Image (cartoon, rainbow over all chains, first blue to last red; front, side, top):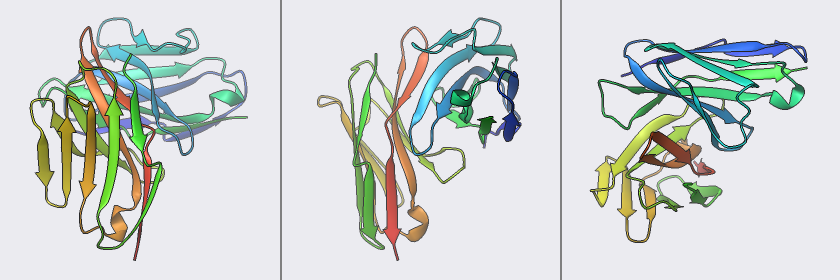
Length: 117
Length: 113
């Protein structure tokens, strides 16, 4: 099956620093990648949609200057949490849609747990 | 925009019984409805999906039904086993002006041995 990786799996940082999270599709090319945020015992909230070679589309209420998304290639998207604060602590999960497989299916990465002190 | 509601939030069943999770969606343009299973601290895993041109789909102990008129869809798990215990999310996907998937709030399923 299609494999999506995320790095790092967990990160602890000080308030005010920036954190970059990478999402890679390992065995397929992803036309679109999605970034979600999940609080404990809650659902996945779509933050933004990332298309290769174009600007990301952010959901209402998500600050694009706070959460910078770069989709540099068909296999890599990055999310940078700039000037992180404790309220940014969360589980961030990416997913990818394959160009070659069933159009609607999304494959999820393992997630990145961010803790901002 | 699309809104997906999911019920119940928690479901506890005895091993061997059936479990049913129901979802409703608001946008009639949604045309793809996946269900995901998420174990604690892990990624969501697609367990079954249904497209809007189909009313029912079954895969071994799992089945999904879709009522487009009423805008609701359901997940049915038969002969539940302890390893079915997890959080299940329904979702509705729409592909107009860009593909987007909106998730329900999740159902925490406990299967008691």
